[in-house]
Amino acid sequence: MANPPYRITLIEGDGIGHEVVPAARRVLEATGLPLVFVEAEAGWETFEKYGTSVPEETVEKILATDATLFGAATSPTKKVPGFFGAIRYLRRRLDLYANVRPAKYHPVPGSVPGTDLVVVRENTEGLYVEQERIYARGKVAIADRVITYDASYRIAEYALRLAERRKGRLALVHKANVLPLSDGLFLEAAHDAAKRHPNVEIQEVIVDACAMRLVRRPQDFDVLVMENLFGDILSDLTAGLVGGLGIAPSGNIGDRAAIFEPVHGSAPDIAGKGIANPTATILSAAMMLEHLGEGETARRIEAAIDRVLETGPRTPDLGGRATTEEFTDAVIEALQMT
Ligand code: NAI
Ligand code: MG
Image (cartoon, rainbow, N blue to C red; front, side, top):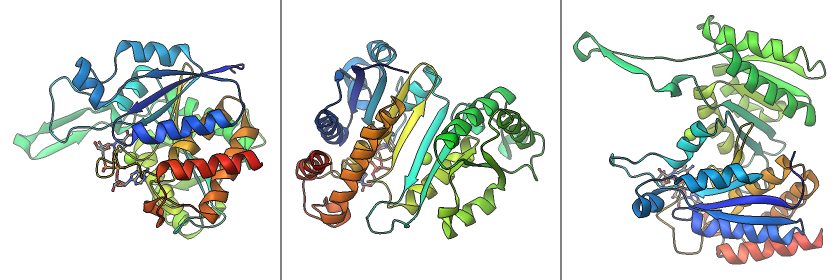
């Protein structure tokens, strides 16, 4: 665990990243914690400038600091030679094996009261090994879905520790009824990991039934762990349960580095207008503080966000008229009252 002063890498990225990351920085500065910020570059603009979307210097800064806050990166819609997606590259390069997506009720339209769960998605294998082949003169396509014992054990271990710090319940999400070898291996590894965490109540849930139960009664869940594709899909579903893109934070966590980022993208349609909702990035910053062992301050930030979401001002995506700056000012004011 890191010790204060905490060193934080800030990467704005592209589009509204230039607006929401500075907003989150102001909130972090207002917490009174000893923080040192290091700025780094990544994304499409970085690619245009240097010919790479992630300069080596950025990787070095991420590794040399305690945690990283990332805004968003634009991906071109057409294939550009030499370009690769910054976040995907960093996940792989730094072995950020846990993608962590909390879904918690916030006082915004469409958020389901009582929801407080976390989707823990395996981030390194499954279908995302990107091994596809074509056979039969183009009429058959096969994609490999790789499940290993070690990666499954590692992600289960992360989820078990998280469950221990929360409500003590973990759902193992799978499709072992159809895929007994691969998802069976996932379950075997997860149950092995669980032997060392007897306080966590384990439940197996088949992925399709899980989707329905999440929609009907999200309050029943605490931590859910699953392989890559199931996590990709269900974590968007759970973001939808609590108010959508402007709100949803995430973390990409490995043993050597951790990068926190809003779930949304660079929002080119509103970039530069000063009206982006910084909530998802501020909540990502709170997750980052929790990760650094500053849970109390993280909860103060969440409470300040909720107070402002409840009483206003709100940004246009939530039906208000506030700018990013006005919203952030209100969050800082609420933070200083707690
Ligand atoms: P997007 O999340 O950027 O935007 C979708 C819609 O939600 C837009 O109408 C946008 O204005 C709105 N929106 C998103 N975040 C908002 C916020 N904080 N406040 C207010 N409104 C917000 O997704 P889209 O349009 O599919 O992608 C745009 C670019 O972002 C693409 O280049 C895409 O590749 C990239 N992207 C990057 C991600 C990342 O960096 N992790 C994730 C998703 C997309
Ligand atoms: Mg997704």
